[in-house]
Image 1: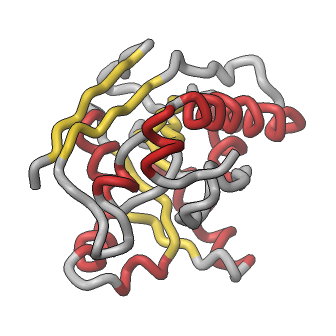
Image 2: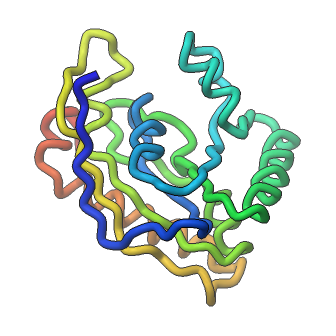
Image 3: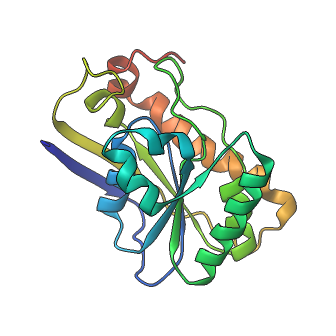
Length: 196
């Protein structure tokens, strides 16, 4: 497809260890980038609407724990399924924005599910920032081009000493890491017409 990944990682994933990978979500490319840079088995949690996309949806349904965000019952079921997978030592990937934001949004508010699971299972948060997926592979079929996809992987956030009451602090810490990186990146802000 003409894409290359440039990964700037401050810390590396260890094989056979579970992580909670959290990244900004701006394109259909995001899950593929995440898989490409990870050496560990990963299960995704994603919204069920994406299963309707031709071709992409075929693979999506077979690899993702799907959630209907409008249904409390669906959210409970997903949480239970995610807990079972984490018991088996796999890593989990969640785009905590819970949606793909519009062009004007730098980063949408985070949901807390990923952070609750990370604290419960004492697994580190791996914060990844995707700078180029949206502008190189937009939802708009008239936009996009091949290029280098820059990814920054921050030093992991430990959850070993955190309690359930600190979930919002963990969520905010992760949000700020991604948000500040995106704001500071001139290409991201310029090429996607984003506003501070």
